[in-house]
Length: 171
Image 1 (cartoon, rainbow, N blue to C red):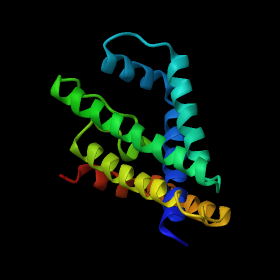
Image 2 (image 1 turned 30 degrees about the horizontal axis):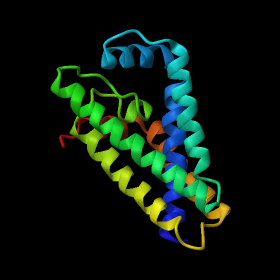
Image 3 (image 1 turned 135 degrees about the vertical axis):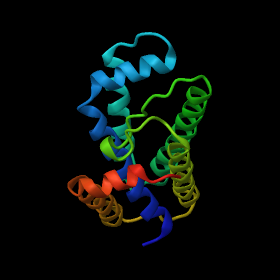
Image 4 (image 1 turned 180 degrees about the vertical axis):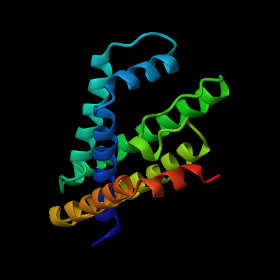
């Protein structure tokens, strides 16, 4: 399995998990987003955002060079934008939770969140670079990588003490 295919499957899982963990908390996320932008937002905008994350995850499963390029570029742009918003909100005293990944990263935004986003942006770059070649990865390989991300996430949720220990680590 090549790096771009593995990266695409990994990001499929990451974006799917991010959207699923947010889907059940639309009210709280709408309030957090309102704090970030400084005004009220309709819940429909947060639902559309969560749906967009899910669709982005699904795009990474499609073995097409153009779709991989679009998904990788969208992922990278979103992650850089999220990081910039987190940095901006911290500098302006708005210590909000990004809502990413449920109980694994629900603390107020921190340098750890930005670091994770930068690393995921680098994984997105691997997909972008791989989409320019002749091979775009087998669908089974992408699904296998996405399944591995889901398995690790489910394990982390089931073993809550490990997730709590992770959250208490100082970075």
